Image (cartoon, rainbow, N blue to C red; front, side):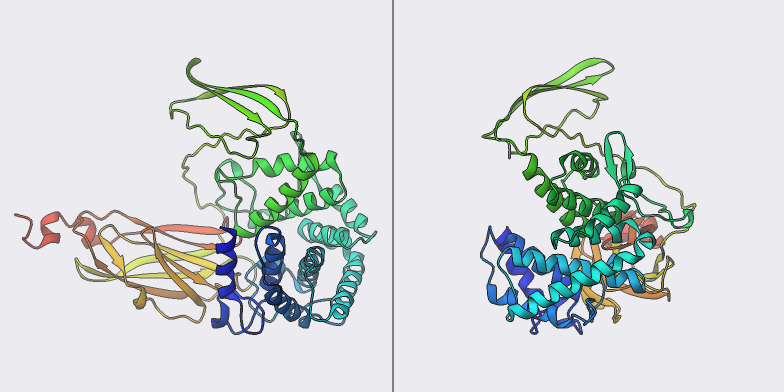
Length: 470
């Protein structure tokens, strides 16, 4: 799978060596995304072959974006909006992330065509990061976390100042430690995953601190952070978005390497109860030979309590995943405005669906976002009919949905039309969901439903035009 991912990623490399979310169809490569890809490549290099020439070409492009003062230009779209920040913090975030990439590349023996230029830019960026600490008390936890990790990786003694400030802002609760973005109530999310899972920014922030603790071999603080990150994972092992998942998994992996012991021998008994009566039990054994194997069980849905006992020596992780749906009230300001309706019903076999949307959160626009329009039962969407907007970068049809990728959503309203036509004889169409969300902060989202009046009221005889024996 790693090799498949590497080969697929190369399709997004532009001729100048940079990477962008949509390859050569974009007007320019992105500094952040190029750094992200280089980082991913060098981390995969112990497992698969990474062409050094392709990596060097990307690093060369990255170095050409370096300014004399230690900052970096971003000629492309900033699809990861947290990297943009404000006018000053955006420079710090991007410089920190790029410095991390260059240092990790050097660790894995990847560099630029000109090694002297590479080393000079690393020093220049490190100096800029150290100077940025003058604004220490003005930074949010995210900026402090990425600065602390970048400077620790660079071997700078000044990293301690950022880490000390982070410790003052830490939230320590129930044997865990994490960081949250400071925000006023008007910006709080109207929707959160079950159990109030942390948003992508808070997970990424906390993961950068765990990476710093791992570098410093700080087991005591690292365990507190590790426990919190584990509690935020979804049942498939990931987190809120692509970016926070990548950083969190790297942090957890590097910290786990510090605490790993080959001497593990644990027996586990899991029992399920319903109204205090046992309805199932399962034994597990974890040893050095199977410690890397995921062992699972699907308890009966009527289980209302679980009892777990473990004996032996070693550290194991047991997770219980619970799935449920909840209603929510839109009682606070959302981040997007979305309206979806059937604007034309030419017949019971052809409809036009229109989605109108705009950004109503802070700032003039978002980073990369996705409009997801459900398709009514019995219908298919005509991909070629979708309205052409400059901000549309990709359209996908899958799982009864149309996914439209936008490199940004502005505060000015925009509309997209999709033509749908009948492919199966299904009557009584139900309301269909549609939503819009920020790709890198999916907790920023709005979901609505739309329905065709004609389709909802049609019976099977209306649909099949007398060919069903009506």
